Amino acid sequence: MSNGFWIQIKYPDILFDILTFNYTGMIESKILKTSIFIFASIVLIYVAIKIATKRKEDSNIKVCIWGLIVYFGVIFVSLILSIKTDIFTTRYTIPMIGLLIFAVSYIFSLEKKKWITIILASCIIMLFGINAYKFYLENYNESNQKITKIIDNNIQEDDIFIYREIGVGSIFAIKYPENKQIYFNAYHWTVEDAYKAYAPQMETVEDLSILDNIKGRIIVIDDGSTALYDELKEKQNIQIVKEPEKINSSYKNLNFTISILNKTN
Image (cartoon, rainbow, N blue to C red):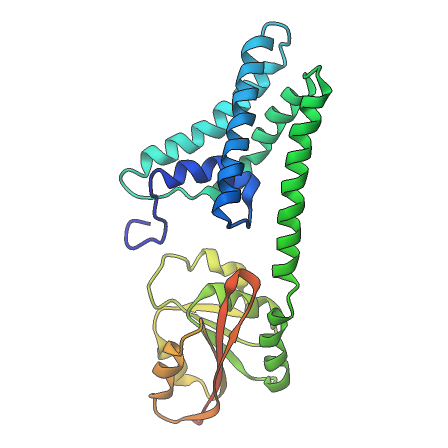
């Protein structure tokens, strides 16, 4: 992470994101996010007050306290370490979200005024519904199928995929496991061990010399540009089978540019 890593922490935005992340999900509206920030703050204040007033009556609250200490403690330590090198991003808190959910849920269960619980729970359910709907629209949009339809209509048994962005490339590593895949690690990230998860169909390389001994068709997947296509087409013995075609996808706003080359020898 020390050289050119993509994580960037910006204050006070990161503090805002920490509180709203578990409620906002894919919500991008600033007005709605501000409302959620207020709601999230109210929930935490409510939990803190209940812990302070009920801890002597209920020994189980100690478990809630430790859960919150671990959850926010890890975030705090990560932010401190990020003073030297940014290593924290809000989605990294997902593996420990159960600690926060447990603490909040247990405190809610102690509330004798059911209308308070109903209001807070209803707000959470409503936010879940909004996120689930937006998630559905993004993941099941017809535009997401266009790239695979083009490939399905053009792919041949011995075709090789090559890409230099794992965000787009990993999709094809999973979708077309019978075809050889090459991830061109042009930026020399230290990811080779991690990307062995896509083996054996995908191989991570740091230069294009691997193509010297390859003959046949190469399906080039760019990330909306034609950078890799432009680099490959200048090599010797390369024929253009399909000119670059750009495709926009609703899923994560991914952009693809697909082209097909043929290496004669």
